[in-house]
Image 1: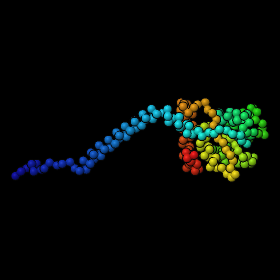
Image 2 (image 1 turned 90 degrees about the horizontal axis):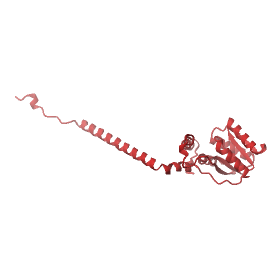
Image 3 (image 1 turned 120 degrees about the horizontal axis):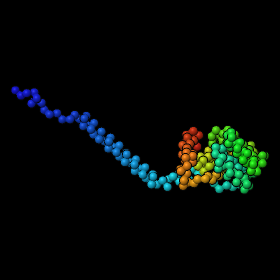
Image 4 (image 1 turned 135 degrees about the vertical axis):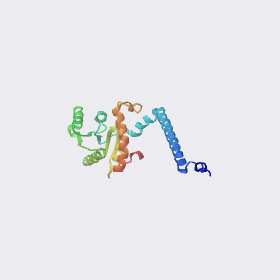
Length: 224
């Protein structure tokens, strides 16, 4: 009589074990491919950075050539470059009245700056405590209409012009006020903005605000 050991047939690997081995191999292979693609992508971005980094700034800047208007409007939130540009436009007689936006000490400092540089008190207006570009735009329109203005130069930073322009166009009422958006020249350029931490943060933040404005207010500035 044959022993039970001799009568046993060799067993083959169970089907589910073969499938598990294949899945593990496939997953490992997939992650290798993803890792390789990631490295290639990073290398491509690094090599082409002199193309897409300048584009990131120039895309945001939709500033226009200034023309004569009833008002110069200095948007709040960044007086460093905006105030000098607005004053330059005033001194060139591009408009006879100035509206200054801002909050707290920033607004006080800006108002003192324009007054000290020859803008008379009766030609100087202020908009205080605007919480956002959207909120400020509503206040600006209300003031312009109360003064029967037909046109205005909107002065802001270059990276802010695209979203600001889209916001003002969205809120434009009837009759429309002719608005020209003027870039306040910064001390950096499209070729080196990413080298300064503050400038880099402001521009990258702008790319986060754009989709937020589209979802929150219906202002989709990338289609402009």
